[in-house]
Length: 394
Ligand SMILES: Cc1ncc(COP(=O)(O)O)c(C=O)c1O
Image (cartoon, rainbow, N blue to C red; front, top):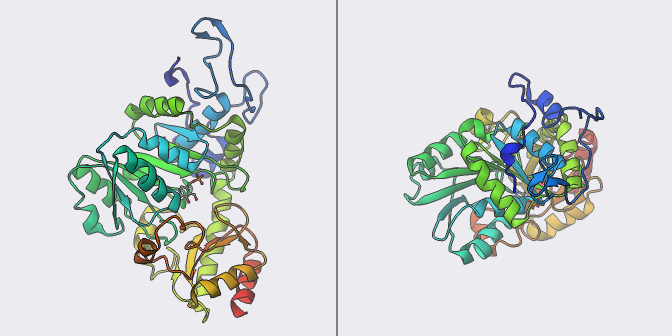
């Protein structure tokens, strides 16, 4: 089996700004045809000139595929990592990262995180003897005093669904003190707004299903590694566990990445204006958006993000019945799980994305029954505002 060292990624331009890198990263026009985007190499296997002598350096698509490599190289470039690995879903990415742990290892995780990650930690990883301790990583005192045997600090910032901010600098400093590594789920921010490796994080996780894919037409995930020394191990687990994404999904995801910056600009502008509108609306309780000056993580967001993102959450006082009526009354916002696509989505974390979190735990975290989460799309702001206003007034 050839190893990934034989693959030479295209040269990066360290001076290029984010939008330029996102457009060009990972691929140079094909020598033979001039193709400006990578062909979708829909092939399961590759010819060898002799046993163990693959003609083009590729053997089998689970192991290496040129379309996947283009996406992987592009993601490594835009996140500023040594390499990236892409997967069939965000969960497959997280699962594959956890394959690098061993029985008895301790994960210290933020306590506000995607419900599916919580389920993976509690119902699968714990069965294999990996321990998980949930803490409030938005609290600097907690980060400064991590358990001495922490192996991996796992952070989502901004978190899902409460949009809590964790300081990346403090997370990395706290983890270093106890010799732990740091993984940051960067799905909500996307690399256009936040690049955790610049703050010293060891791994960046993405559900590329969300902003990177950006069009709600492909499911995928990624791990970006900071340190070259981690490449072989991750590559081994991607290949050995068979969790990689398909060439076609890699192509769609790379196509999404090309326009990430302009989409994020619109997501941020729309979400920010909607947050201000909701704060003023008498039918709305607390509004959670990192761009609001009274958001507890506002200063951290200003420091480590290049924008406040397209996600926001708010509470309606009437709990589930009123929240349910609201999500049924909106017309442009679509009632659906997921986020980060061009279209605006609305959902209720309690019965939907976070249904797998036990009720008591969910309420203790502050995920109220009447919490409504918006993934604000790139439609015209006035239409989104009018849609919410009409539904709220009803
Ligand atoms: C923050 C976050 N991480 C990971 C995931 C899992 O990604 P996927 O659905 O692509 O498996 C999600 C999915 O919603 C998410 O919101």
